Length: 190
Image 1 (cartoon, helix red, strand yellow):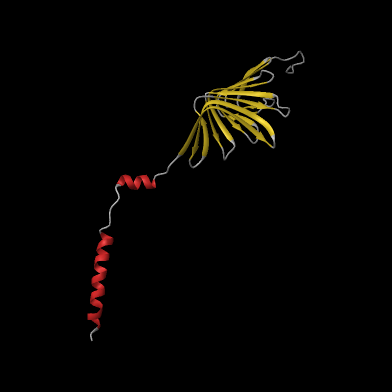
Image 2: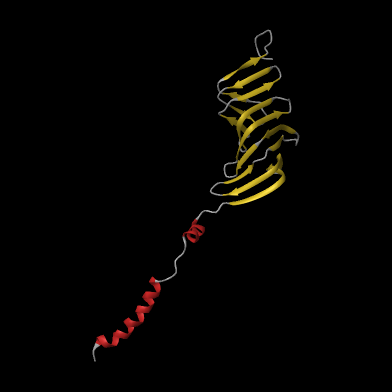
């Protein structure tokens, strides 16, 4: 008995299987693109009223006509049609109000980017205006590298290169400041 005659039929059985593997169906470029492209999930809501609380205390109330939540590489929430936010002090009284035509909240960073006619007004009526502004939720700070204007009782200050301010506008540090301020007879600000 010869060995080659025993194994010949098994080689013949493998041949159709190999041909089947090499002649399997092809996917179109469109199919491959649909399977491999990144999908960005979006959620949309209208007439938003949202509350922010930390450690059981209400910190802010946000209202907006449209909110779009994007689950991409960075999770963000956009407010493309304007937003209004009231910030509260420890006694639940409004200490600051904010308005902007556009806002984008970066959830992982705890920061909000605001642009287009950004206006912040505190309880005393002091007003901060800027073309764009960042709000750091964790540190309760506003900041920008862009031009900003601050108007308070008896003073108008321009931050030519931006500013950093506490959420209640009690402490403001200007970058490249210019402006006018009323002073008393002693030469100190009133």
